[in-house]
Image (tube, rainbow, N blue to C red; front, side):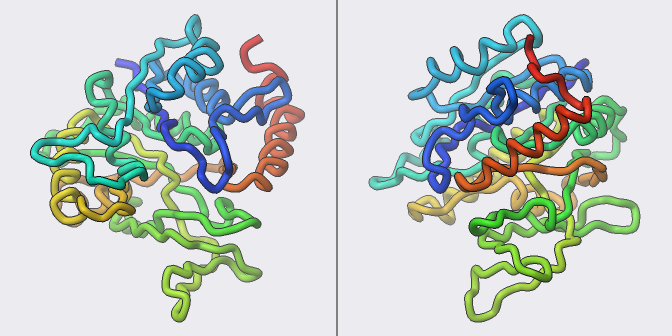
Length: 303
């Protein structure tokens, strides 16, 4: 069974100022997720599922989904604020999305095979897709554990010059298995590496060599049931908080801590690129053009 690519594309980039998922970055107007789909196809993926919001469904289908209709199976899932398990209902005043775990759960009905979950606005590179594709089709041990995987990137290669970023900082054991992932939500680039400034008085210093999660996770379908239970618990504790979000890395960390899952960390030789702020765009455009010049990608992906 070929794995599926699940792309989280429901977020409106509040700091970026628009639908960055639809902003052209490549030499022929390609958006970042075009390169993800291209890399997934040549790595052997058989389907792509987009998690989007219904209000821009028509625009997304016409401008993005139509490009792939004759190249790979395409499906859609919809993240809605009001889509909550009983007995929970949408709190008055809640406008912020519930987070990546909620977005992933929106796709449960259309994903029945091993899958890779990624962000729409991150450029991961061919090497990362090939490595996770090989891992997704390998046999899993029948030992009662959930067996997942991820590709990690060095923190220094994932920072912005123009403001803070959120990253899941990872630790691994001697066998390359993930032991913890801690979400840090205000990481700033510094001359010597980076600092997390959630606590302004006591910043957490990084040297930049730390491995971080960029939401590049390989899952089997059993993850839906596990995350559904985790999301119910999240709502019980945080449901009245209008800003709280349920993050996939945090929930994966809990599954590891509880002895329910193990996550293999794969090393990628590629470089991550991302657009968090408008000023990041020029760097991403230049990086993609360099890869095109080197022959890694054609000038026009879908010509």
